[in-house]
Image (cartoon, rainbow, N blue to C red; front, side, top):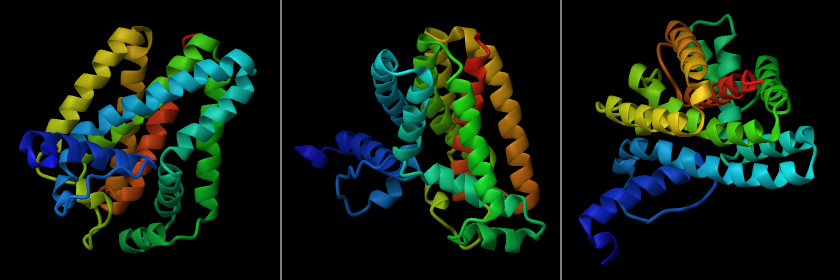
Amino acid sequence: MGLRSKPLKSFLVPLTTAIRFLTLIPLSWHVRDDEKYFNKSLYYFSAVGLLIGSANYILAIILSAFLPTQVAAVVMLFSLAAISGCLHLDGVADSADGLLSSRPKEKALAIMKDSRTGAMGVVAIVFILLGKYAAISSMDREIFCLSVFFMPLVGRCTIVFVMAIQQYARKEGGLGQLFYSGNSRKPAIMSLFVLLIVLVLFASEVLLILTVTLSLTILFFTKWCNAKLGGATGDTLGASCEIAELVTALSFATLF
């Protein structure tokens, strides 16, 4: 029966679209109209975050059993970046170049579209990676494994949260706009529900501090993007994922 079954198609195509976009896994059902499933795939961003997090958790358990935490932390940082082909780190660099420029909106957006990375972008990537490394390398084995499980989950959920509260900034459209729809709040609510349930079940100790710090950080970042760019772009959505991962790592570091 395969994709001739409507319920199966409506589940599998958005899921594989989310996996294909958020990871390097080239999974696709090769349907002709799969572009119309981009906004529906938002419902599955949290599921992809859980899959990435579960793989990271298993890898972290293995690495931390044989390697010092500092070495294991470097490998996990590589894993976190590589699973998306460094797409979100690229978003950090482009966002920093645009947001930290003194140019008006249109010029800032043009700078972000440039494939070349400026000094601000390099500095932003360095600080993001250093912050993550400092946080996860300071943890004991159990919290280390938990943190790298939650980092991709919180990051992917945050992308959906940001889409629900920000309009798209580029008039000419872009990759990020493919996922926008009038119903972005519904997948955001679902992502929030999934995230809170998983936090309550596996890391209730960090629930309050993570919720507060992440909310304040993302609120500040989105306000900044609105003021400077007029909304979100694909780059700022990727940057929000990386920022959320950093905030998650720092929140788990407070458990010591």
